[in-house]
Image 1 (spheres, rainbow, N blue to C red):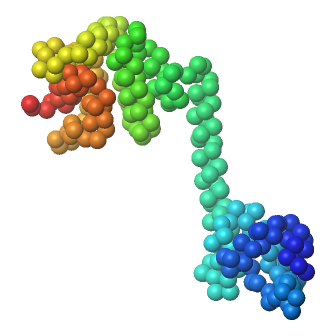
Image 2 (image 1 turned 45 degrees about the vertical axis):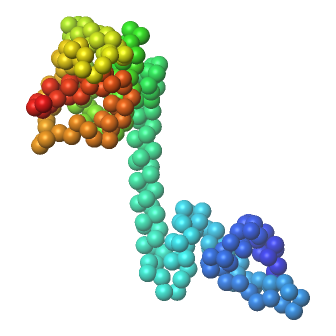
Image 3 (image 1 turned 60 degrees about the vertical axis):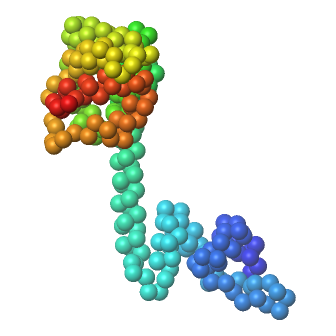
Length: 248
């Protein structure tokens, strides 16, 4: 058989055959006097086996292990590992579909979406009223929501929902956003910074566990500060000091 006939018999392309030659998966036959390779039945058998193994989901490195005479793993071991990997993928897909269904069932997603259903419930009642700082706050909450573990996400959302159920807290949040917006063009030493920081701290749910000295200049907070006007950044930093009990 010529290479085209071999490829057609197994249902692959000639390019695939050459690729398997290059990787050492399929032995190359010697060339005949006319310069063409002449493939034997054993080449078709090996090529067919490679196709069956790849269709099962094995990578070419795993296929090489199966085909090698001194393979460290026999076919049963490789197929068992593949089956376990597929089971993990199935579980991950089921979880993704569950989350997607929860988002769809929740109705129209927020502008910051997609977010977890827990945060979506918080954003639904979080006051905005056209405040630029309220928009930033929602974006930051979406960032925290993305990186948090499911347990931390649930605790944070429960705490926020708890305080936002209180009309007085919602009113304080509106006041705090207004104070932050007013600092857009202020100097970091402006006396309004301290008042704003205390107004923000009054809106934060209590019960923050702190181990050791917290780092108020880590990379994430640094990015938050950089996205704010200088006086706003100082108010947020001061708010964190108040909430976390950091001595200035």
